[in-house]
Length: 346
Image 1 (cartoon, one colour):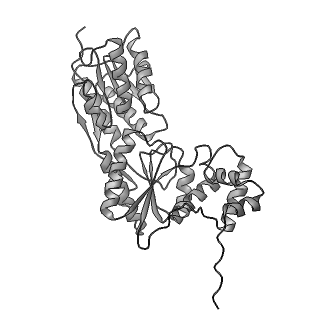
Image 2: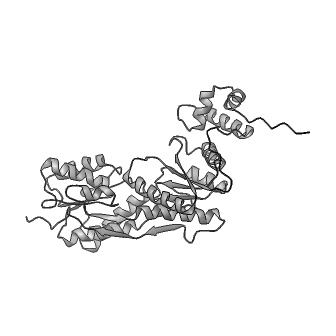
Image 3: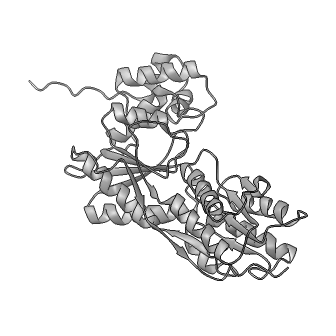
């Protein structure tokens, strides 16, 4: 006699068991921040007990593997560049690629939320996760490690998980080379507009800039150093401050191309000629760098190569092997264009 197929738990079953609405259950599963922590914990406990899985989760094809890539801000040219490398590498390897937004920042540090999110990825057939500059990732890293699911971070941000595997660029060396280029052009008042202080990449680039100045005997002036987000608005805000100060810099180094675009915009608005009166340096070499006015001198990092390396590392780990290195750095190179020139004559 054929046994009846067990009925799959539904969202309504979870809501009834917890004593809340289906909307509240949905908010808990999606990491929304407008419900209490106590309610979220109760919902996730019942979800685990009933074995509930969303009906919208894709069913993995037999014999197919998939990798999930997760990020906070998909619109960045940097993210797009790395994603191109991820997509090319997964296509070549015959692996499916799933894109994911991480749980809400206010809830992703909660263990229950992180565990449930990771379980959802595994239920979708994911054999590994790639995080792209993902903020506050430790909860998800810990949950992935506990579940035996490989996780690779690209350019870590405020991550402290001891067993984290990461892929990045030689940020320190790249920034030092860029600063040495400006020093070689005669610049001594070189300002720095950096990225978030919690970003490993931004911090290493700042240290590279400082190392170049120190090695050349150029005094590091704290009044010329700023930090913000990797955004055009950051470059615009701090460039206005620096260029309207009593002693403006003759060169500005930006920790990212988007910051440099903001610097160029303000220089143009204030009538400061680039590079005759001001040299501007970027970092990343995103496609927009060649199309700014003037074209941007910047540090090239192999964004597609970083994405491809992350995929290769995930597949090695998914096959049960340890990566050759837990922290991979790809080489950078200086792309000299027209936004840098000799220090202006006094």
